[in-house]
Image (cartoon, rainbow, N blue to C red; front, side):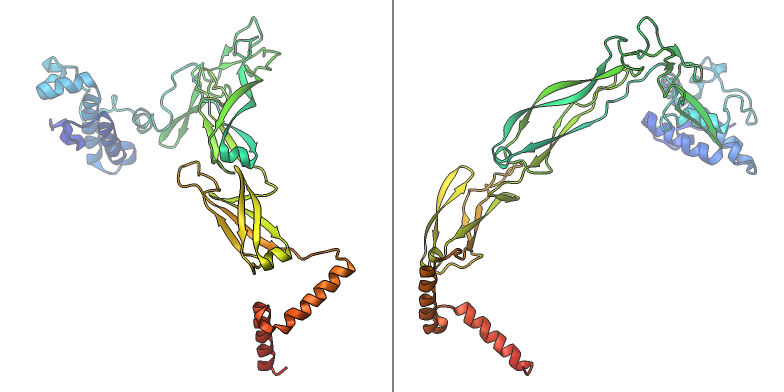
Length: 383
């Protein structure tokens, strides 16, 4: 076999990283491995050449020697790190296609089993926190109690009955993983018997029923920032469920739900409220006291105010939790029709109605405009 430059063989630069070298060999292995190219005579030679190049450049010591002395630094006859076997037809060192992919692609399929239990991150938890509108707008510190899993104090978290120990899994031999052959690929996956732990509990702890953890409650302090709204959530890192076998804990997410308010509704940074006013106030005008979240304000009602009129009170809304200007309080006026009238009150209103009608459209412009539109509509229909 010709002694081509190994970097040229793999098609990488001399400063290529280990990942680049592995990626280049993977590409060539897919293309030239004899198991996939039985009808191409040059494939075997090209694969062997790529395998030699990869064996040298993927080993830090061999690569250093090769960079300094070239092929002489890694050839057995020249006092290097040793040769690679016979001619192009000798694949004793190359291995099968599945073996090559087990080595090169191990990181894709979970890597080789390292033995023993591996820590697993705990799951994230969610806590639904109900707040009043006042609490959500101003912020507050709240105490919450949440269920949590802790190591069983009786078995020390092993899951085995006190005085006993978990046994090595007979299926995977304690490795926690088993190898599955799927066509060309040899894939490792978690052992179905021990679920990747490498051990099995033959005599479970009666207190935790072999789980190694029991449920308790813990109290946490949550700082709710001012301006939160329904749908916002607060992340408490590391306060979720404890990880298994030394793994890191999950996170706790506090989900905010703002309760319905008897007076105000919120839309983004603005607050809205309905303000009923009497018939006389709407007609003659006046001042009305309206509430805000931090006190009272006087709302001036001009004469002739109609139902649906909107009044804006600046900076009496909410300051958004993510920053920005304070919103406004928007009051929507509804004119309330008097009810439960006495005979005298009815008589006075009838007199008032008569005097208003004598003034024509001057007193009820919207009513007269609507009636004129209805009349025109009927005339066009021939009614």
